[in-house]
Every structure is written in structure tokens, then in C-alpha cells.
Length: 330
Image (tube, rainbow, N blue to C red; front, side, top):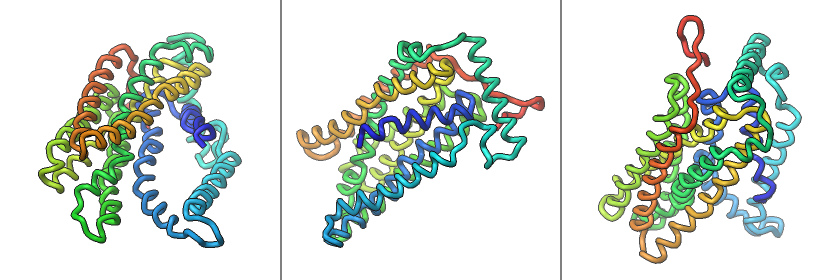
């Protein structure tokens, strides 16, 4: 399953570069995909719990029904997208003729500017570029917090809910609060980055706020359940920096190098998804409770913010594009 889905994000990102210029423009487009991850947690957890109750129907186990009923629509949607998605702006029938020309011209102009600034870039140029390796490491470091919190949020909330027969369902419903906050801030932060033309602070800001949220969570876990839930929600702001991180390669790579470089960064960053959930589980087992694991995530998140603060000084910034009247282009 992992091998089959490994190319999903790189391909989606490469596809978006056919319709969007780099920098904040691309970050806004990617924010919809990034926001879909926490939203999937909101809908997916109760849906999966319900599907597991189908155990025994037609002789199949609940987990088998889960794979079938969630897998078949995904495959069908993939086939539909393969048939219907346009390969280029000029082929996009869902756009008006004038819109197709406008988008195509913007993407073409951006590519020409990149060629003028950096010349032709090969596939291997993207693989060798130290910036994508450095970014992949940083995104993986940030992923330790993101994936760790994502997988353990329901159990952290479960530890805050009073013990009764509604404890489990209540924890699942309350988990929607931080995940919904993460989705909303992801989109809004990227949107504001586009209008302001700033990527630096819109990347560092959510990471810093998320770090503060984790620190407060570590302090409040055993003191006040309501405030701890609010702190957990605040920590989910870290997710909002994701589109800005992945919008940066388009500011210094183009063409084949852009696709290969983004894929390299994505591959390097995957260690965060392994280390994060494992680290919280191991620390919880060793120390007991979630206070120590959350404190560890706070330190790691702070270090990751500092890392990006330094790294982005070496990365170019995409200038805000405006029309003749000084209005930011959409």
C-alpha cells in the first residue's frame, strides 16, 4: 500500500505546477491538499469506527469491509481523475476561454523567468540540489511533531475525558476541534501569504505558535482538561506552515528539476512520519502519561523552527505579482 501511494503527493504537486506559478501562489493551491489531511481525520475516525461494526456481514470481518468500502471509491475517483483532469490550462474545459489563456500565460511567464534566472535544469540537477535535501530534512523534523500529534491526538483527548460509557465517542468528537483548526489555519495562512507576498514569516509563524501550544499542553495536561484541549488545538497551528514549506522548491527549481527535486525532498522527509508516532508511544510507555512526550515534542518543534529560520535565508523569495493598478493577482 505504501509503495502504491508513495508517488501520490509528488504527482499532485507536479500537476499543480502546470496551473500555478511558484511561491505563495502555489502554496495556496497546495493548502487545499494539506488541509484535507486533518479534515480526513475529522471524518475518517468515526467513519472507520462505524465500518468496523459491520463485522460478520456476508462472512467478512469488519476490517475487510473497511478496506473495501473505503478503497473502492478511492480507486473509482482515481480512474475518473485520470480520464477527466486536463493536462494543461488550455485544455481545462472547466475554465472560461479567457481564464485558460490567463493561467497559461502566467505559468509560461514564470517558467521563462526561471529560465532567465537559472538556465535549463535537468532531472539530476533537482536530485543533486542541496536545498531540496536540506528542506526535506527540515520538513521531516517538523513532521515528527505533525504526525506524532496527528496519530496521538485522539488518545491525548481520551486521557482528558472523564471515565464513563460515553468516553470513547466523546473523545472522537472532540478530536474534530484541533483537526478542524489545523485545516482552517492551513488555508487562511497560505491565502494571506499570497496577498502579502511574504513566505518567511508565514512559514515560521505557525511553527512558533504550534511550539507555544505544545509547551502549554505539557503544563496543563494534569491541571485543566478544557485548557489542555485549547492548548492542543493551538499546537495544531503548526500544520499551517506545510504549504509554505512545499511551495519553496518552485522558487529555485523548474521543469524536470522541479519534479525530481520535490520528490527527493518528499522522500527525505518521510522519516518524520515514522519517528513522530513511535517517539510519543515509546516516551509514554517509559514515563507514563503524555506530559513527557509532549515536552519532548515541544523541544523538537522549537529546534525545527530555528532550523527553518536559518535555512530560508538561503532560499529565494517569490515576489508578489500585481497588476497595473497595484492589485495582487489571484
